[in-house]
Length: 421
Ligand code: HEM
Image (cartoon, rainbow, N blue to C red; front, top):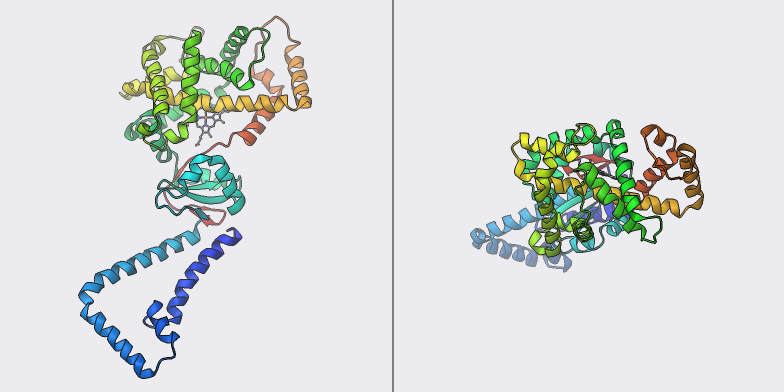
């Protein structure tokens, strides 16, 4: 069972248990400190009997008073032993000395660094106790299939609280609608249907690139945001939804970034403790509230297929939960932008910092689309298939730079790499 435990951990725990049992073994019937005290001194047999007698007398006299106390103490000891026994079967556990808070402060300051340090120290699977929650991390590919395929772990129950805190969607509504919404999003955006987006995506990208002009020294992070925020919003929600006015664009950037950066805290702490984050959340909700009627009525110019947000609104209407439309809009906005933007940024950053790879990619693009000219490039799936290096670079970037957290709630103990959680 414990084969995979790091050297120090299981040993330390076993040692602790060992100490307690040895106490019982060495100290005879009375057990604990009393027994050791009696034997420690070289006592006369008579003296020893007397002491025992006294002890029994005292015990008898105060039986009524002592017994509940003794029962409570024994109960606590039994509970501690049980918890230690349970821990011995599970992965290494990192807590802290403050009850409930556990490792919350250290973990909250720099979560990714904390996880990386824990991984180096304790191995690929470990548990962190923070703010009353036990979180077990499976950090390597090995064993991940058990985690992904197990029926004893659940996505919806793991995210219902964070969804409530970050998007104010009550748990009962979230649980009722999740499966239907998941099927809809997967149906519209699954691998086999992605080709439907390429035309509109290229068109929107051309529009944004034209606005930039031919020269510039914008910082890469800003450039990616300036391109992808409007493109994603206009494609997934409604063409023309993203603001075009300079001041409104700035406001959108500022509020989305504040919301995204505070998301981890927002998913754990009450909103009243995060004033700025809450302000940005309300700003984004108000933006959707104002635009929902327009998104609903606007039909796609080319074909009649609704956008992802329009399909989502139809579902909410059917399920009589329309009042939560802005909240679902906010969730969809965050799910798309919070991943797509950093992945695009890091892919560009890696490619640009490897001139040979950059050159090979550019040569590949020229061989498929011709050299850069005035004509707008039209991208389709078959063209992209001829450029596998681009796809490999994106996948490698996700592996290196987007530590995706796949969250599940453990319903029953699951065995991964011979450890139980
Ligand atoms: C490179 C970009 C992206 C990455 C790395 C990424 C990664 C992830 C991950 C790791 C999850 C959690 C999956 C799980 O727990 O099983 C997730 C869920 C989700 N993602 Fe993405 N994502 C990306 C882009 C997008 C985009 C563009 C959308 C647009 C709609 C999107 C929509 C969603 C939704 C709706 C969920 C929740 C699924 C559910 O409710 O079960 N993602 N994504």
